[in-house]
Image (cartoon, rainbow, N blue to C red; front, side, top):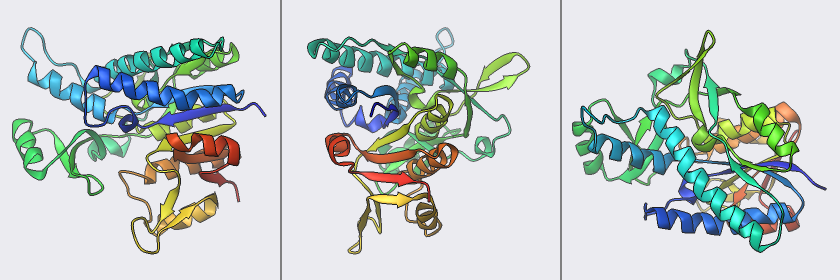
Length: 313
């Protein structure tokens, strides 16, 4: 049965060790080969993506090249810039593949603003990792050069800069995205979690923050009345006791079971936890299913309902 699906891609699925444009374009060409399977299956796709590595690298470029005459751009603007660059690459790759497969579908990238609460406590507690992984020594050197930056150890993989990560409360362009979907267009939206804005009277004011792309994708999926939220990550399933001898993959799991595992601190805060929480939020809000799996698990999901499927109790 045809479904309206929001698919959330991680920024690390776009950029690995090679930060060049050509390498990221190549990665997105590979990504398109997987995503097109949903379209061939008859589903209406809405694509979102992360930008953690990209926006972090862009901030470093901005800082290193900043002058009085040509000052660096603020974080919210850098998020918009990466929405444009990643969206362009993804739009180009998917459109090209659709032409090869003779599928008459248009793909559009939408610079998306996501509303947050100005009083969100996240603004006083930076926690969202962005940018490349560093050694402890590299992070210390970066901290000396940029005293206002904060760095933390990220899931055993190295140190990364952290910034405020407020929760999304609205997607400003959600009605425009619905219009595109109703017209059969494939929108790429809430890139990097969306540009964080707060409402001040009749104005939307950008904030120096990065919204978690999984929570932004969940909020968008609610607002456009998606049938399913699919969060793609590095593994085909969510695990409990991850990397331990008693490791167990989760296949079909209910919201209450996942909440119990969260209480047991089964999921890493900077890694799987926000994905699980976003999936729970979507299922609770809509009664529909959420899925967590990997890019190379898409075939198995479409054909065999594999991956971690989250449902109501």
